[in-house]
Length: 279
Image (tube, rainbow, N blue to C red; front, side, top):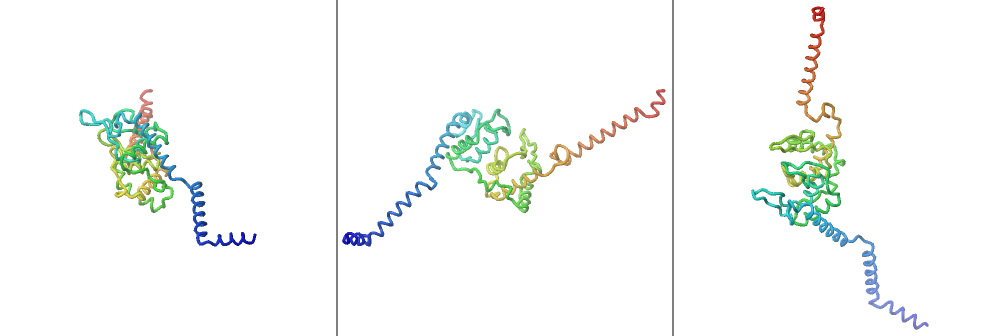
């Protein structure tokens, strides 16, 4: 018995014993990590599924205008039924489909905003498929659309950017306005922060494209914060104060002068001299 204990004790102190124990510990730790840690492979498989699901949705709802491979379809006159989507990125799809502009119900100079026809999950899948065709702008991270975190100074800076680059079309309060050839700058009221960011990033329809090199992501967030702060302010006046001081002044002048003229006519028709003559 004493010999056996001594033999085991000697084996424990073998020079390779420490290495064996270390390897055993690494195997156990690796197994526990593989069992409980987040798996990157799962995310990749989900992304691949999104791409395939988006492709199926695209073939059914988009290929008739944009082509089976999103290369666009050209008409005989040189125009197109739908432009190429290769390289537009996930942000452009998320904006167009998420705001209901696509698919278009009727051909026209501009696609209006309406209730989306695809769910949020389907929109994500369509965006994943188009993004897989070629590199392009991605959907913005939430940190750049969290306008509520902006400080007063950042909102002021966003207002300067907006007044310099956007008011010519969208009005100083984002109410929108008319443009040539039947087009218009849409109202920004009720538009989500993500879609405003994507519009700046992708330049949909006649809107200029403001890449991150032109306006940084932080400045885009400040612009969004300014727009939302203006919309949250009380808006006294006609039509919620959204028609502008000139229109409101003209409206007030016409109503006020019209009322005064009406009162003057009534007094002239019912004055004392008129009653005396009729008697």
